[in-house]
Image (cartoon, rainbow, N blue to C red):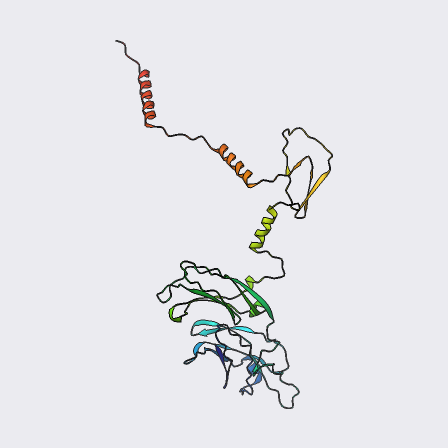
Length: 362
């Protein structure tokens, strides 16, 4: 894509950046000797708008229109003045009534001093080839950033152009650089990627306000060399995922290894002391034996030798105790009555009833 900038009766355009949806032009366009009619104070309060139109250049045919945006510049009647400080701002790009993206830019309009005036225009910014780059006062501070991506797999992919998605591939793009995942040969059988870990080494702005978005695209590799884009997602801010590499942090694998290391006993391992329960609670024995100290997480526990016992419970002993406990808790099983027992109970009830009925004497 490229941007076409128009102001009054002049027009310029940026360079074309290939194969990206988030281009970083890093370019300054200078419109010299622009004629404006009116008083300087009127122009200061109501400057003319700048029109920016964005296009996507194709190899064949006319460039595709992406959207446009109108911006107002900061007017400087005195070229040497600093206030207000120019900062890059985000401007909403429109395509009709729909939002078509955002533009990060800054605009200034200078009143040219007279020939005999001591005031001078600010110097031109440095060049990159034949193009002027963004001045250092406006340019955001860049920091080398490493982005680790865990691309596990795809799920619930809908059909595209009346055909299933069998060979997907995910592409991550940040600041003009991209990394591609491996291609899944059959998404129905194995929907996960062979190599899920990806890495990007990019220069990103230190301030999250100027940071670019992360674009995630999904391609489907089909017959005859077709690679249509079947899915798209944008992560606007990476601030939630930012972490300090110097800070001590453990991954899941490292924590699991630490837990296993602590569970296996050694000479340097710490064992929690278990206190013995005395049978006779009323009897109290006061002994003056030396005390032992156990340190765990900056805390000390003082216990005597007679009151401590180190117990290490294995898995087998734990299972035996659980089985014994379940046997004790089981209630006696009541067997269902058979038909013969039911008939015998009914006969006994009938006989008891007839015995209780009084007999009339004749």
